[in-house]
Image (cartoon, rainbow, N blue to C red; front, side):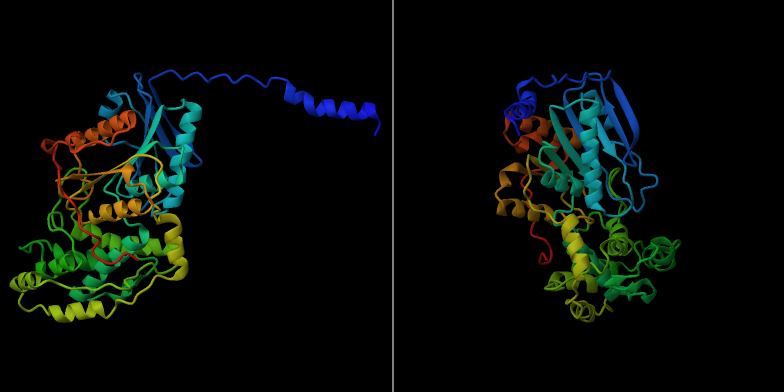
Length: 429
């Protein structure tokens, strides 16, 4: 290569580096107020921005649904949040079930879409109830830079593996109390295509607890109480509906999650998800006396022996690997967490908040966690005033860098001060 050609090639390489690049022009905000809806990657979404947008985006994560059909893209306390100037965004679920990995990704895509189409928020807070609380925790761990803070409500605090184990124990207690219907599959491995209402609820369980025209609801109280006590479940919401945001009574809801939902998770994971290695099922002397007072004919020793004879169950390796991949926590969050729970929750035990706090402490992120408790029993049974207090407290935390004190959560609103849940009822897997 001669010198002239060499110089021309060198100039061609260096010239673009010396010239100024295109000047970035800030995209103007669309006209507000704004109410957008549509589909993003096939998933329905809704974005609402008030005229007085305060710069904060609240991303709402939906709770569990057996089917994506009919899941409304809605927000808790929508009118009040908009009046306070928050922008709101949420996705429906692309499917039913518990595909936490896909649902968290959908929420991230929606948040990125908001930033591209509406504008970059000053602050982005993700929040959700029940499974949406789980999505909140996972999102705060997995997507640093996407969310500044999270408010998980009534979340399962131990991850999918231990939650599946807890629900298997409930099914095993039913087996000891009433006897298992083998047409449902094995108690530790549900039939994959089981249908809750047509095969379990109406033909069998309804008449065991709610038979119409028969006084004394719940029927067979001693046996249902055995199922509750041997699994350390609270009494307050076990039989009765507890509020406008709460699920049906835990005796019914947990039965659904222990059967239909567990089978659904087995299909998603590709194998048995139940396990209880190291579990010991027992009753205190006071619990024994109470149960025998309800029904002196109960064979409590035989029922416990039946359960403890099945304490070597393990999840299939590929199923366990799936649950770890999509639903195991690390505790390594990247912003403040305001974790709220009801003190008596039969669906997602409040003790899970203790375990998540312990996990965060083990990785040194405990200063990013504040736990708050509502005295109303039930699963996700929060009032609108309590919800607004949580958002106000998080705003202050983000603005000042100082975690909220109990004064931010007045007992007059139903919050409980000084409450400390115990450890998870059985060993964590």
